[in-house]
Image (cartoon, rainbow over all chains, first blue to last red; front, side):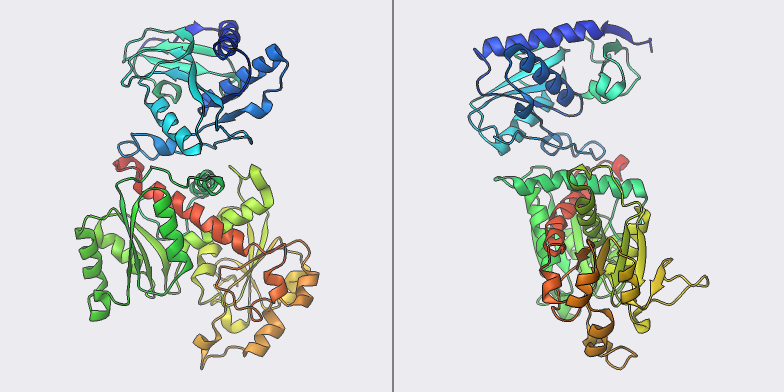
Length: 189
Length: 316
């Protein structure tokens, strides 16, 4: 096992999030109807950061348009893994019907988390459209899912472990990659 | 956790279950009350004793998690034709069910069933022994009342709870006497001497302080008063108080209600209005009776999910 190699530092993560915020606005042709839902744990923090940026860019308060979507109960691997703990879901008070929901996650890998998120979303309402923004896309998709905005494309081997560290959870911002051996929540996403 | 037979569990495990129940509780606010976590699982409610709320609560919990739930009652089943608990359990297991929720008048029946049938068993009340999901829902409702939306991750440290009634014969009291102190609550048992459990060598009962005067305990301004259902008819021939004596000494009357302060008024139901508590007390703002019923569904969803979602050994 080699030592983790840092792929993105704090400044690069900040720039990537700013770019993603602009991309979201551009693709939506403005801020109308946008709702951000992050997938816990780290996706929810990233959604909050994107909401802060959107507030800064547009001057419109996004604090009531950001939330968290837990997908635990919709996962397709509940049976074969140790019991997974759930996280709170927070949906904006105005709901998601006819909104443009941007799902936010830290790592896009197999795509199974996003598949679960789409199911979870369908149980909560009927968005006009659903988009996907991720900080890192490491490839190896197992489902026909792709992101609309990507902070960093990170070609990786399946045996490698990608970790997303965020100030809110881990005390610092970084994206690291290392070869097999280590375990962590982010890499499994 | 492989079975849920007792409310005796480590603090961390109890908090994790309550947190999971907190997430399950969100389904109450949704139009579409269905989660796919237990799709394809079959749960049997095996009830040898009458129960409306516990059985339907487990049934709703299972169905909201997409499990198939089948009710088997003692009456009208082969149990009434003399079949043993073991044979009934093995028969149900042989049909391929994934978990059994059992209520029985016999203390210890769920534990035996768990040994025999080799799949998850949930104790939904056994004799005068335990009723763990009731204690979990009581803890859940109390934690929510105290901490509100910030309840996640919290325990009940320093929360003073008085459990009032026929402690000695109550499975609700016994399970709460195990769970609430594990979460840091200070529990006092209150009732007529004939209703208190036998004291241990150190004078405690079930390891807890016991008092015979409800008035003295109310003067201490507890955070919650948990009133147990009193079944005086069951006490015939014993040294038990009459209904009149019970009301005078241990009922939450209008007069005691006025002195209660902000304490939560808890009752596992079904209530005998006028006996354990006055109608005014039952309907008071401080009454958590209906909140407890709602909590019951969330807590049972958490228990079913914890026991049945994963089939790997690592989770057991």
